[in-house]
Image 1 (cartoon, rainbow, N blue to C red):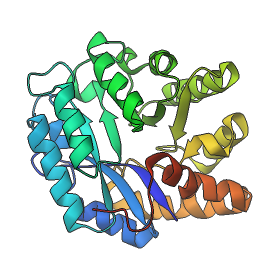
Image 2 (tube, one colour; image 1 turned 90 degrees about the vertical axis):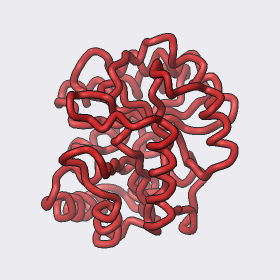
Image 3 (cartoon, rainbow, N blue to C red; image 1 turned 45 degrees about the vertical axis):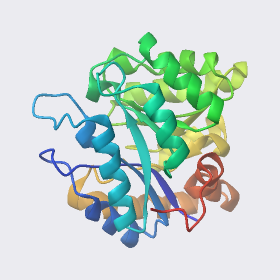
Image 4 (cartoon, rainbow, N blue to C red; image 1 turned 30 degrees about the horizontal axis):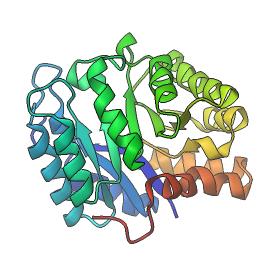
Amino acid sequence: MLIDVHGHFGQRTAGVVPPARISTYAGVCGADLVLVSNRDAASEPTGAANLDEAEANVACLSACREHSHLVPLYWVRPGLADSNVNALAGALLTEPFAGVLFAPTDNGYDVADPRLGPYLALLAKVGRPVLFCIGADERTAPHKVHERGRRHPSLPIVLCPCGAPAGQRAAALDAVRYAIQRNDAQLYLDTSHADADEVCTAVRTVGAERVLFGSNAVHYGGSHIPRHIALLDELRAALVPEEFQQVAGANAARLFGLSPGAAG
């Protein structure tokens, strides 16, 4: 099973693709499932849709029901008036969200912000995975995500580089490596914006079991599909079959409790 753990759509934000584009990408690339969140929940930069948290996540659920490849992630807006941990608890209890996404750059907060604490405590309690979008600035520094993980050592946390520069991607890999060495956090890394050599380096450094295929779908527009078909072909050739299977979908299926019928 091929699972892409990192996709964003938007219907009110200029330049962000609608859900159908991600579904098309999945079908052409042979992805069984793509985990998606609604970027209309972003409050920054100027021009972002800044959609109410509940409304944005209801729209995400609706999109996933309409497109068979898509699996919803709950987008949390810590510190904003429309976000609270009780609403998140209720949504996870009653709706098929596979996990929760934090996007500090898009909502103007720091990973170290204490307001994240109650959300992460809840997620650790219910065993639901977390994805952190890693950007270019210090607010999303991977070492801060590692520190968060140390406080909740049973909580699976996936670091997703969202257009982060090479140095920040290297720092994300280092954070996962340090967590493994110290056995103090359950950190994982997705493959967004990495080439095949970088993915293979990550597999050698932290093990195939800590690397998940993610593409930031569909960040590269018209070139997204050929880019990722080529990447998957290169990885099939470069990794042993068991490693490829882990990276391409088995790790995600295990962490997020997914099966081929999990979409929607």
